[in-house]
Amino acid sequence: MSNAPVDNGRRRFLTIATSVVGGVGAAGAAVPFIASWNPSERAKSAGAPVEVDISKLEPGQLIRVEWRGKPVWVISRTPEMLEQMKAHEDQLRDPASEEPQQPASATNEYRSKRPEIFVAVGICTHLGCSPSFLQGGFGEKVEGTDDGFFCPCHGSKFDMAGRVFQAVPAPLNLEVPPYTFIDETTILVGEEEGVA
Image (cartoon, rainbow, N blue to C red; front, side):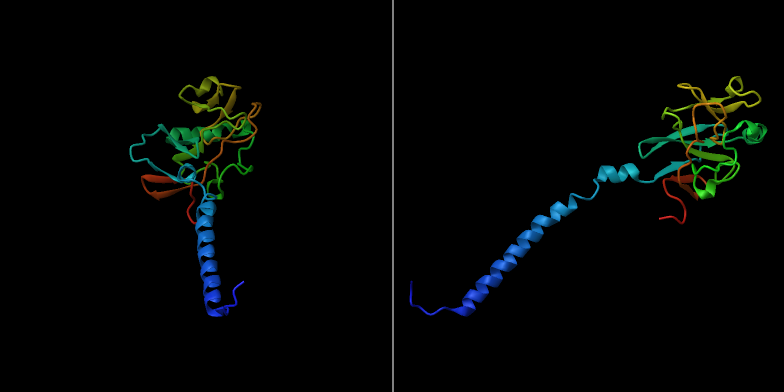
């Protein structure tokens, strides 16, 4: 051991400098670790709202988009389709849409914000199949109704508001996703006005 006097100032400086460098190193290592907890860009985009241009949507036409990996239908209902919906309400399992399969803003007889535009997740509520849109050929499945959705897997039937008929395997109406009209010709699926 040396009998040299101890330089307390130098010792203090080295202790502080080592602590600072160690703290910076720990923070530098923690940043990427904590950032890895955030969802990836791919995951964020999978759940992101989807804009749908309906400017070229013809009466009676259905277009499909994808939102959160699910098919979403946007349909322009004709006045005849809207009128036919009233004729079979006694044959529906949940005609008043009392089950929470739609946002509050779409809890009405049309299950939509505008009667002529219907937005729904195109997945059967029985086993997750995708029903077919039968335009003009639905009368073979339900008498007196020309248009509707039919799931060929197990025979579930839905009217033009996505309401399920009685005596079929599907227990619930089709889901209506949250959506809002950005303007007259653009719908934002996945986000509802005033809800963040």
